[in-house]
Image (cartoon, rainbow, N blue to C red; front, side, top):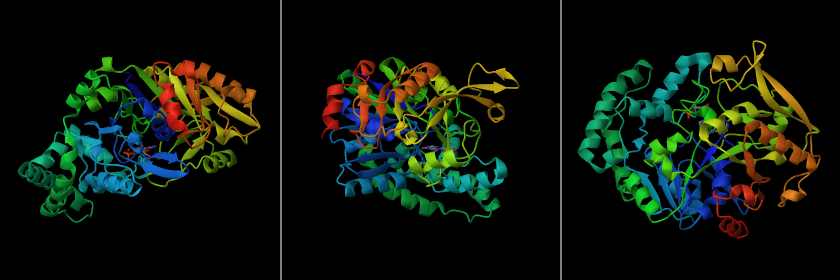
Amino acid sequence: MTNVVVLGTQWGDEGKGKIVDLITPSFDVVARYQGGHNAGHTVYVKGRKTVLHLIPSGVLHEGTLCVIGNGVVLSPKAFLAEAESLKKLGVSVGRNIVLSKNAHLILPYHPLLEGLSEDRRGSHKIGTTKQGIGPAYEDKIGRRGIRVADLLDLDVLKDKIRENLAEKNPLLEQGGIAPLDPDAIFEEFKGYALLLAPHIADVPLLLDDLIKEGKSILFEGAQGVLLDIDHGTYPYVTASNPTAGGVCTGLGVGPNKIQAVLGITKAYTTRVGSGPFPTELVEDQGKTIQERGDEFGATTGRSRRCGWFDAVPVAYACRINGIETVALTKPDILDVFQEIRICTSYKYKGTLLRSFPVESEVLAKVEPQYRSVRGWGRPLAKVSDFAKLPSAFKDYLKIIEDLIGARAGIVSTGVEREDTILLPERLKGIVDLAKVRAAQSR
Ligand code: IMP
């Protein structure tokens, strides 16, 4: 029994979907602990691309139990649409998907209120995915949220929708949006209640039972550490905790049940939405990375901002999450560069900073300090043996490892499961390599 957290160490889009899918055979359960359908986890299997937003990336493996925890905000409409599209691909989506009764629901007013809030911010807008994620979490903290369990008691559901709309409709009207009809929303959600009911469970109890039976759980994070509401680049963050602590609150699992945290780290940096980005490349090199890396949002289609690898935030992410092992993704995107830069530290007001500054105002003014390394000059794709990797790439990797204080246990060199180098010694106590390898070659 090994329970492992898999989380993104940058601003999201590190390639978590591929890695979760790859190592799922080593686990019995994959459990999402935060976020909502703002996430976009892309998985390729035998040339077929599947984008998951809400349902854990383990769903593509028959027999894996997929859990959506109380830390997630759930849009029933998005969930059912995703389940439907998976069914069309022949993926089973029945009792293998469990929803926490304590997860909060996203209602139709949430994206509308978010639109108004973003408009009000003008040039300071967050650049959210506009899925209603932030307003749903606001209602959770404001103690007026509507939860999955409320779908099981229609009288309660009706009252809560009315109470919420009494508060939200005036806000919508102030913003020039027509008020919403509580009866229409109730009817819509009554329909969802019927469809979701078979999936609803007491997740902390279920996970405790499974752990006692000796089952292994992969805790799947969405977004990334730098988008964490507490530890990210506030206010340009999402509204939940992608950091490892989110597992305990977002699923009801004790910290002593977690054996390891695997960080997913992209070989360069990307960011969607607003906020400071010290190593951003606004000219040709950024475009090259964007195009080669297909850096366009899986949820919104927005182009991602691209830049050199920045070790400062990744070292911070490793420190605050207890990450000792990372999976390095997409280094093959850098194949074409003769010279590759790595940001090693920041200077602020003439002084080297000791750690990553989370204050956006400071981060916007830091001067990144770079180290240049030579490119490896040949494609990394399809190399499956670490020893056969070019020495310039190994140098690049070693520099990154030393800077972030963690070692790579996985190097991903392409989108497919088999485009992955596994380093057995470094993955001990994290995954069962035999199971992963068997699935890789299927
Ligand atoms: P929200 O999560 O929709 O509230 O958006 C808040 C910030 O998080 C925005 O900058 C989004 O672009 C960013 N964000 C949300 N989800 C993701 C993701 O899955 N990948 C990358 N960025 C994301």
